[in-house]
Length: 107
Length: 415
Image 1 (cartoon, rainbow over the protein chains, first blue to last red):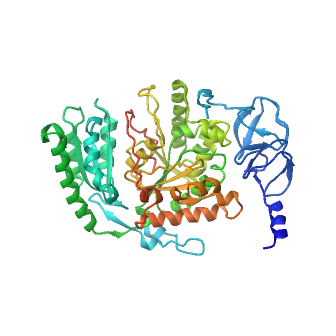
Image 2: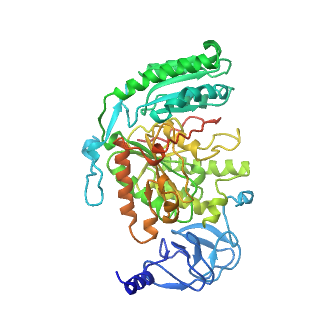
């Protein structure tokens, strides 16, 4: 395979999965850099406004504080702040509906 | 019946041959995929002697297990009985100090009644450490020779009992490894095997969806109650099954972690709710409730991943499919552990410890179904006698501590 073909392939390969249509977050399947396009398997992309490490979530649309984070059609947390499209969605802007156990949040 | 449902055949994606699966028939009709000699200590004070007995035979199929407590425990007793009469176990040496409260004669008699060779050694009556070690090693050496000569018989999928567990999950576990295990579990349920998933504390947030898959509405209500019990228990404890490793790898909440863990169970009907030591009455998919009944007692119910693995084995699992993101390396004393890692980065770093790389899904190289077939292939190979990576590396993790369970409710096993 030539170098040119490899580059074309890499650009087309998805770097994000959206588990169910309608989810408001996607999951990075490899590290996505700030300003890189997060691209889903089904096509379509949004610009990451900050780095999204592999396995982390990116907002696909603006999420208001208090709104549910929806992954695989299931609420997996509540936004604690307004989250703009393309931002990292994680413990700094999401809380559990169940357990907080903040004492566990060590390295 | 199970033969007629054995729909899995070697093909383009499945390279393993189910016809190669062989096991050891026990007096109760169950079949083991291994023929281990177990050395079990009945109190921590006998642990050292038991370890000394087992040590020279560590690479030869001798497994060390035990219960550390001195105070009586119905749970500890029932678990050790279930484990010592497990189909993967061919013979048992019990090592007692002598003054602990464990009902050692009752355990010995139950093992003998199961048709297994068993010897009970009491250190205080054998003349101390050195003489107990010498006599114990003689028993183990003789039983190992017998175990090696034991005949085997072909296995079908209907003979298999398989548990699944995750440890050190990351943000890809719920996207790659766990759905791939779910795909393999769907195939195995369809083929007539018995499957179980567990850890109700890691299903918090998914309870309504799980209940919707229950064989009856009453079972669904029992499942919801079991998950709510876990939520309440951990709230009272001020602690949860969600930690720094999960956060570092992208999981934000316990319910997000739960969603990923839940994917291991696949999509088939849930036939029942089990408690540790209770075996599934028929093939199918079961949920194992691994949280104490009653108020908070004895501290954290599952102090690490190995305790619930022990409980699945006590409920009859002959092997465990274990998924990890950060890279857990554990095995288990009585049941071989197949490890599936969620990402290629950790697979490359810990390749020696991992059986299956599900990171190929994130890499775009394979589908969830492809990896599910590879997991199925490894299950078949493991049931054919091929050591898993953790077996080859000599892993024998085992944890058993105090717990309290009440009997199952009437709706838990509807079929």
